Image 1: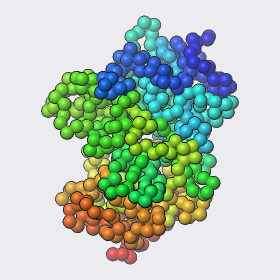
Image 2 (image 1 turned 180 degrees about the vertical axis):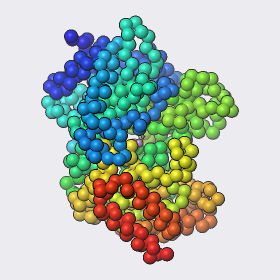
Image 3 (image 1 turned 90 degrees about the horizontal axis):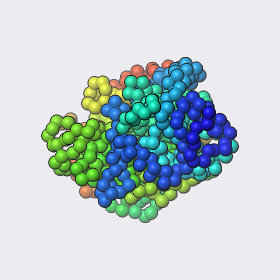
Image 4 (image 1 turned 120 degrees about the vertical axis):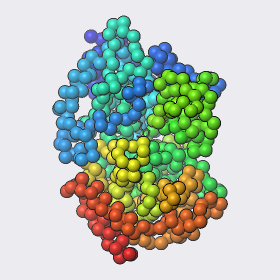
Length: 605
Ligand code: O2Y
Ligand code: MN
């Protein structure tokens, strides 16, 4: 049976066959092939407004922008419903949920049968990275959500130009997404259709496929982001000898105009967007943004690693974003943005916690209830988001879309640690840097599950995003270090902005003052920067960090750079337990790094 179709169906035979088979199975009322045009974006917004999903914001306050509220049961990525369906369970490893591909295909096949009745099936060809870049990759997402189409327009490069580059190749990631809410004849739609009790976010790395059902939110539904650019791409990167990482990319320029590009891996919601858009407090230094969440890195002809940001927009956490914490993010989202699960002001703008010092007198909260200061509830959801085009960022680097990428000089790893981990520490070697990445950890806060202050390891900030066995991932990183000469490899740093004094206050102001640490890293990349070798790595001397004009308590720098030998020795015990998860897949080189660390710590007592 032929389904009414709009847009230009692709001639690519693999794609055409897959779309036809999917339509037969999901039974949409209509098919639309996305061309990525501004008109198509506007049409998606119009459809969302018509369906009650979105409210247009005031044209003067937030031009071209909408306000969306999701179902209260569909507000974030769902890690416990996320599966890696590799042929063997051993390939998924101990950090991923696993089901056999056959079993999962059967489950998904049943869920997908007729799941798009009453809806439009959108076919979204997209490029992760500048279209045609040798570092970029192509995917096609089929979805029944106009919200997903609009977000994919902003977060990726969508449309006909992607199909032109794809040609007849079958080298693309296939992603199928449904909100899981078919409509019976005449049944009215809900503002946020989803299936809150039946969600699956599944990945088939061997065949480069993604199947997602039941959620319309963020990383569960915008399949280019976490599912493709991290979980599937990490497997492609392993197989093809490159890196797909949960990293920001920034451009750092010194007062003389010399540039170094730096990546940074920090766990989710640990300030990657803030660091990528930082305004330096050190006079004459400049930070510009290339990306705030994901980096794909391949070898350049000169033997260096070149990175692209595979995304075209930011899907930023709204609460906490303010003119104090990140003015550039707020300015980016001044127009043409989608605001999800924020609060609505009476004059048609959005608001969220900490956006302004003074709370508005009244709001409509993210679940449609009237809100006023002191009512005892938050106005926006803690995971409320803005989807906004990267090109609107006031500090976007001019080369952010350079198809050949930017050469990386340094990589930062970091977590939230109240003690033990110093402000910054340089790895002795690439292998030592991989060790530091593998032991990345944060203490749990009240917001996270588990006991407050419990140490959670999140190696390379990839725990929820590595599409294969984490032990094999460590081995891949180690192998990458052998692919070029050591001086061409990025230097690796472990940073911690969150160390506290015995009284409990933060020792480091963070935000713009992180530029002081970036300055030292820049100098190290230039073969300068005052430093001292310690048991844990190479640290700045207290004079190595530029503290001119810094508002820090007396002795704070010494404490921030102190090697807490007993703390590290206790940490080694926790690393033993962390490493034990990976059993025989833990590379011997990392066992040796841990043994070496213990030995150096004992010797320094
Ligand atoms: O909850 C979601 O779906 C969003 S998660 C997210 C969004 C943007 C950048 N990073 C993340 C993350 O979880 O790391
Ligand atoms: Mn992220």
